[in-house]
Length: 313
Length: 295
Image (cartoon, rainbow over all chains, first blue to last red; front, side, top):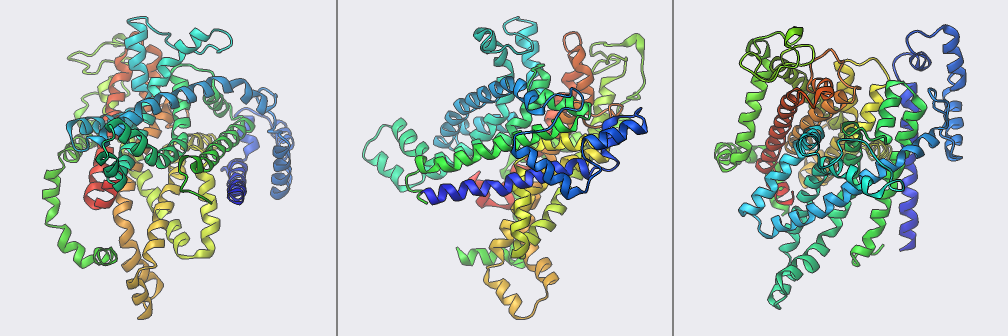
């Protein structure tokens, strides 16, 4: 197993390297002078020169890249042009809301999607199946802001049940923390739920056709036991894979949801940075998120050996 | 298994088997048929917006600002007294252009890269690492970053949404090419001296067609959604263009007193994405029954 783990860990390096190159080139390949873009419309020639020197844009491309990569490896993500503070610090300040929203959404979606998918596969072709599938196509297509504002208008503004927007830290007030997370979680979670419910149904359908399911039923096991212990457990690998790859979709949704509910997370940070053309921050956010994405999918890949003892490397 | 694969890959056999069944299959799938009808209605309303809308989407009637839906203003008015009905119909034009352009561009680029990666083993490793890297960056985030590089325009939005979609197409095409190139009939074609372009066009590309059409449909749906997200966030289509995302972004300020500002464009957006997705599911079921069972 260990050689596999080492190989799998090493395999993430080229991916991260390519991400670094893409993020590096993003600014350099933009049409027009990046220093001028950063400086803004009413900058003088001196301002532009100063920014160019500050970012090292006056040096050869390869030298710039190696220099930048060296800083990255030492944990230096550069400084925000607008706030002149380290990018990593800015990200750290904003990480709690984003992490809280992502985790609660994931928990919500998994809790909802897996029973939905199992039920749909169990009663494949019935009206239950068709309803669940229709609901998930719908949930997959409805934009976050329609659900988000719908919930805000329905539950917060008219009934005053939950806060309209904002975020409260867990350490500050745990009750307010949960109350503020409910609406964004539901608004964002439906898309992810739809994705997971579809894949759960599909893999369960395949698993339920296997001989060992027939055996389990023939020896008189209760149906829930057949479905969960024999069915779901054997269908778990593709479902867990989709939880991992669906993370990209989830993070994209987080950016929009943070905007709908005025949550001061990484998504808002990114949008603020884009509007201010604060490139070091944009680069830092993309690198950090791609790193998390690769890491999560690495952990998921490695966890297969736990989920499915047949997988031995 | 092997014989059916070869039979299905023969265009002549396929044509005979598929064509008569198409209409009947449509009747067997009422949901996709409904999706097509809905999509046709939305496309008609978007293309015909200048004739159906009745009012200029830019005309401001400050006296009538933030009016609720009425006989004069079917969907109400926005903060400048502009007609939301007209703006929503015109917004459909933006989404339509984006959906079609992104689907076409990402499919073509992905097809090209995918064929190269699948057929030329030396290029494969490098190309696929680049695709892996691109896929590690969430699509919307990459699009947002790309939007920051230059002044916003419809073209920039199309490019920014297309780039994150390309790797998915590449993977799909590469997988098909990899499996097809091992088939006996490809060996046979090579043995009788078929040149590379002919081999590609006649024997390999036709196999990618069905999954590509399905994928292109899903990409169009995703592109329409992503454009609205970008515009909503203020980093998409230039704000003066009445796209659904822009109308919603402006309307959010008045969500408490004039919810119709965001309701109607959001519903149109949801219906368009839904109808394209349903169409995609239907096409998948019709064109590739094997996939249908899996998803």
